[in-house]
Amino acid sequence: MRRRANITTLAAWHGDRTALRLLLLLGLGVAYAGFARFSARRRVPVLCPFRRLTGVRCPLCGFTTATARVLDGDLREATRAHPLALPALVAAVGWYLAAVGALALNHLLSRREA
Image (cartoon, rainbow, N blue to C red; front, side, top):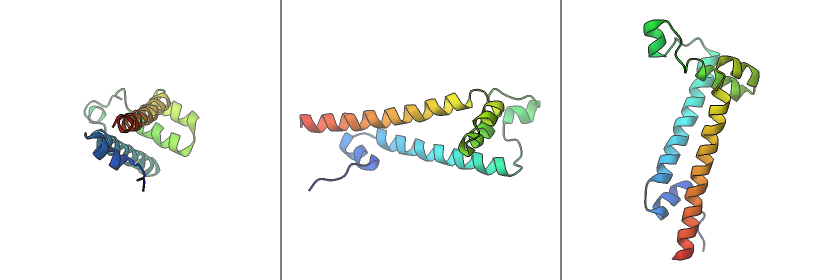
C-alpha cells in the first residue's frame, strides 16, 4: 500500500526540517493575511513603530492595507496603498510554491535512487 505524500510526511522522508519550515511560513502568511483583512475592516491604530515615533511613513507603510485590497480583489486600490505590494505578494507566493516543488522533487529523486 502506497502512502500519500503531504508536506509533514515529506519532512520525515527528507530527513531535515525544510518542509516544517515551509509549513510554518505558510501559517505565518495566512495569519498575516487574516490580520490584514481584520485591520482593513476596523479602525486599528497604526502599528508601525517608525511611523508612531516620527509621524513619517516608512517604506512598508500601506503594505497591510494593500494586502487586504488584494485579498478583496481590488488591485487598483492595492496599488494605490503600496505600489510594490502586488509584485511582492506574487513573488512571495511564487517563491513558496517553488520551494515546496523543489522539496517534493528532491524527495521523489531520492526515493528513486534508494
